[in-house]
Amino acid sequence: MEPLLSIIIPVYKVEKYLPQCLESIVRQVEEEKEEVEVLVIDDGSPDASGKLADACAKRHSFVRVIHRKNGGVAAARNTGLDQARGGWLYFVDSDDWIARGAVRTLLQKTGENPDADVILLDAWKNTGDREDAWEHFEQEFFWKEKEKIRSLQRGALYFPITGYRTKVPLAAPWDKVYRRNFLHQWGLRFRPELKVLDDMVFNVEVFGRASGAAYCKEKIYHYRYVPESITNSYRPDRISQDEKVWEYLGGYVEGIFREKDWTKGEREAFRQAYYCRIIKSFGICCRLCFFHPQNQAGLGEKLREVKTVLAREPYRSAFESVDTARAEWRLKALIFMARRRLAFGIYLLHRAQRLLQ
Image 1 (cartoon, one colour):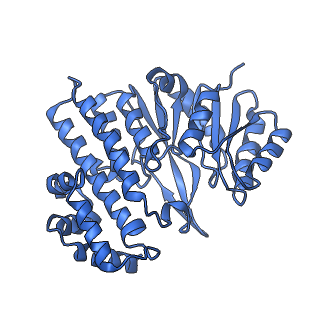
Image 2: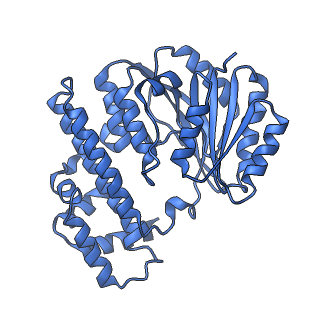
Image 3: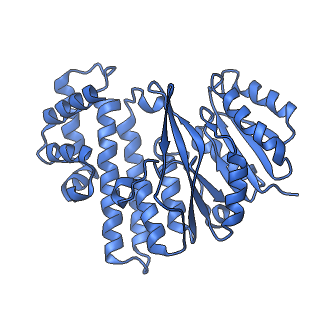
């Protein structure tokens, strides 16, 4: 009998955190053996992560470990997507863990929403000993209306533009469970060629094809925020990696805008979300690339690089065409400086934001 749910865990260099992740899952699946499988995708880990996963699989028959050559988290998730047998797919990052009762909640909510293609759930953000609730919306829902689902699509790009109070990034895969047949029907996959924001692109495409979306107010996931993680490390190539994302999304936008059921207002709302995402990512590049402490270039060289980037597409169009009323307050000062090519002002803004963190 095929399982109802496949839990997919891409693994790479996480021997410090993997035992907690696996234990949080297997202790719950023990009670649901015939309904749940766990796929651990070892993405060529050079540490003991692969051995830890193998040991877990020896103890639990519902755990399968797939060892593959390192190809990045997107490729590892795709391997899990291809190998999964469950009717629903749930992705867990290997340095995080799931809450008590999460597996039962997933089985219950997928059973209660047979017409959904994707179901959103809530999470906890864990920073050291601090734990903050991450909640998407005020009320649970099931939506089949295309215009409502497209608001989630815009939210995957830039969630403040939706007007929802959500604190959880709609771009992440770990706060959602996906119907497997739906993903295969539309050929929806993560894109290994994108080294950043591949999960965002995946969810933009998911919401673009979904005919039903549900939200359940259950906190089932613990997201571990680690300041020294790769998402906060020096990335001298971040701007070039971002530009690969904009190149792909630019083509995607042209394609969906040719679909006749998009209204003029929906096109403009999506375009504004896209601009805001580009601007937000530019701000991240200031932190991880241009003005990162490990960047050894002189300040003058850094400022010239900022001006060069601002002068080219899609950044020029994004900063010039974005409706500042749609941007969160953190971006408005950046937009003001960028429109006037005030690179030194952007530098001072970055310094001020670091002091406020």
